[in-house]
Image (cartoon, rainbow, N blue to C red; front, side, top):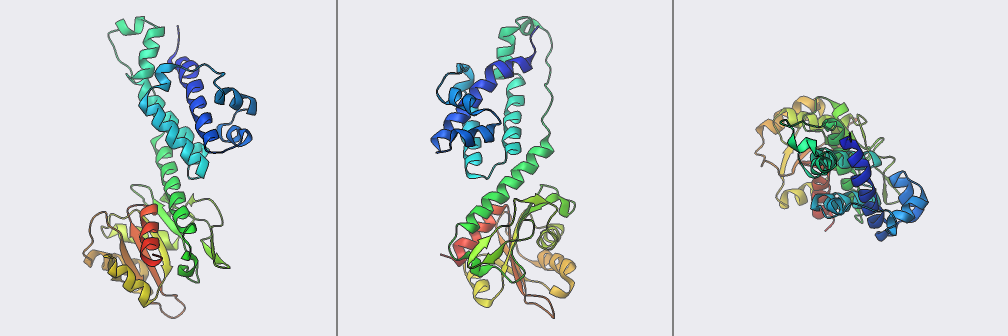
Length: 303
């Protein structure tokens, strides 16, 4: 009797780890760094990277496994994918390969009686909520990378600071919106991110995004930047719909403004308010995901 989990351990795991170790080393990471990312010893990394661990050719030659190793190695190397996110992505593919696919076939080869059984079974599903959350966090990290790599972006940060947020597909509150804890600030002309994105740490920018969604906008991400007429004109000239709302009654005003706007599905758009007593004028750029919103701002204002 052999369980399919044994096939994963014997065939998939050593092959996949070897592929990851090789790709991470090719990206210039040290053995120590690779060991930390993969949760294994440096000696194990050396064995994987030098082909001293025997893998399974069917796993190594599978295009989906190759694509996953490429994607996960890139995300781990540049910091846009967390170790949890990398684990979840691998788990998703493993479950797919277990369900009547590559790993199921290898399981049948190890247990021939399975091929003759007049039944099919589905292996346990991955926690899709966890995967989706990790994908959103990774998306915010990619958006932050766009902003922090753009020379001159610090000049667009308002006095209250900037935040880049992205929500889960069907958010019900700010706990379903990922953002930077504490906001991005200008430190001597350098946009400084105080911590890794988390869920539930933004009230203001997340609130604007949720209000816009409540009015029917299909946006899942938002970024606040400084307001002035030149910025607004540049965004309008770039083809983005610009919509003003009343800062005195922000939530309801955002919903009313969005409901009356002519928004193009999937396209970024701009909300702005010109300030009030004790309230700084702010511009918000909203769109389908964090990288798209970040690129809209960078490409428009800093080109």
